[in-house]
Image (cartoon, rainbow, N blue to C red):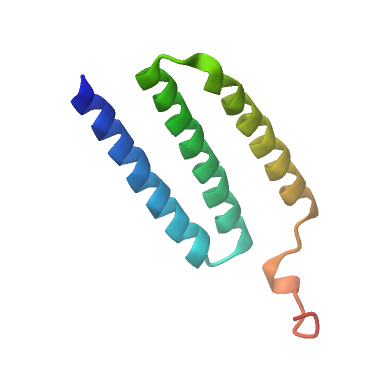
Length: 92
C-alpha cells in the first residue's frame, strides 16, 4: 500500500510543478487564473492524501478553508479583472 501513496504523491508533485510553470509563463491573466485554481486544487488533493496516509482528520478543516478561499478569489478576480488588450502603455 505504501507504493500507492508514493505514486499518488509523485503525481501530485508533478501536477504542481507543471501548474507552476503555467502560472509563470501563462500568455494572459485568465490562463494564470485557471492555473492558480488548479494549483489550489492540487494542494487540496495533497492535503487529502495526507489525511488518508496519516489517518489524522485534523487537516480536513484546512481543505474546506482552501475551497472557500479559491472560490472567493476566482469570483473576485473574474469580476474585477481588466482585459489584457485594454492595458495602456502609459499605465505600465
